[in-house]
Length: 62
Image (cartoon, rainbow, N blue to C red; front, side, top):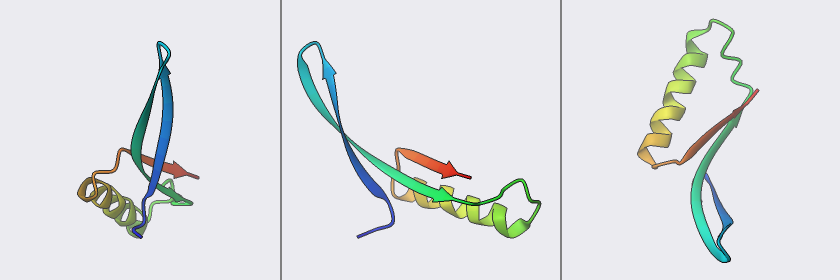
């Protein structure tokens, strides 16, 4: 299992239900307001990981 979440969402359009598969990459507590090069490097690596794995959504909480 890789580090991304797979979400399946059901969307109703005009009495027709469609399932949408999304890849979600989630992280937290990056504290990017702190001016530390390691934090910005970690964010850059997350973005590169998301691009490599074709992530649909990157969620940063905190």
